[in-house]
Length: 169
Image 1 (cartoon, rainbow, N blue to C red):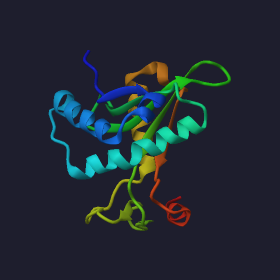
Image 2 (cartoon, rainbow, N blue to C red):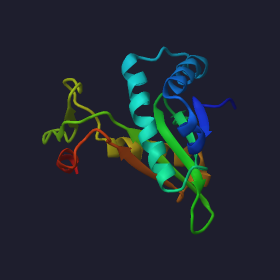
Image 3 (tube, one colour):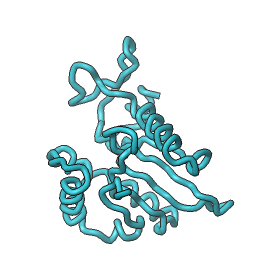
Image 4 (cartoon, rainbow, N blue to C red):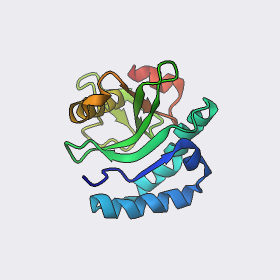
């Protein structure tokens, strides 16, 4: 089975990469793996979001955690922004975290649809990022049974204020 992710590196290795070199590598691999052309907003998302997660991993002493970027859910065309894979610090057992990166700053819940309204959302708004990451986790657990009980998910809303995040909780 061929790899269904664009890049796999340790958090430490990603931290050492130049951001533009990283984006160029992801663009090249997107064409090879998924046969797609990458949009400018997606490139900007990679520039802005990946390092925010990598920095947190390094601050927590988790530079050896493996980071898979833009991984297929294996059952659809959807791609997981980041899958962090390592060992649980207490048990040594497999541990994985699905990360959904969002560039959103101003956001609110549409009370009629429970979808998220934000700049650039369009008329249908967007799926709640927690629901999105939940969907990714369930898809991965179905496809990779060894992840059951070892998989968590997080939405990285690094541009949003605490007040904006509280509005969608």
